[in-house]
Image: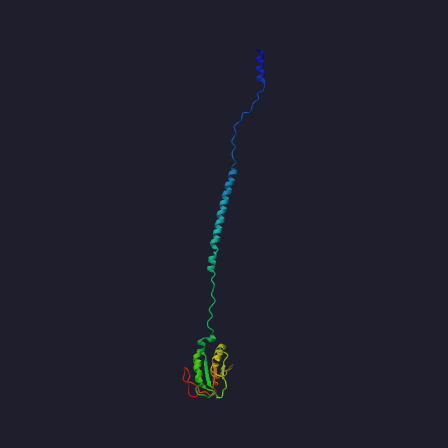
Length: 204
């Protein structure tokens, strides 16, 4: 009996060995800074996006597109050159010419007058030269007469007369060009034919 009481006392006095009882974990409170920082970054990113988008839209609206640049770049066409004054009929009509018969053959001045009218000249006087033994047709003209007109006239008269000469010199009276007729091609003593567009006066 004592042995059992002694054993019970020894067991009650011996330390009890066992696993610790798990204690319930306490919930940690979240730090508010951890929540605020991401929210702030999101807001900041959204503002930056809208600001950047707005500025790019303004630049795109202000800067012209390639198509508008092409439309804004207007190519000014170069002016079409007008006919050269030296060959216009108006200049030929404003020039004053005198044709002198230098061969003594009646109607020679009137014949050349008709040729010149066909070329576009309108102010043409006729007369007789001081001599009637001209061996070539001579053209005397002022410096105000375009050279191209003289070249055209020489080319035309060379198809009619044996020899044609031209020189720049003063002309008597108020004329711009004075022409003295010489012999025509084919004969030195031919009789003249009637003028194509005018009736020559006697002896011219």
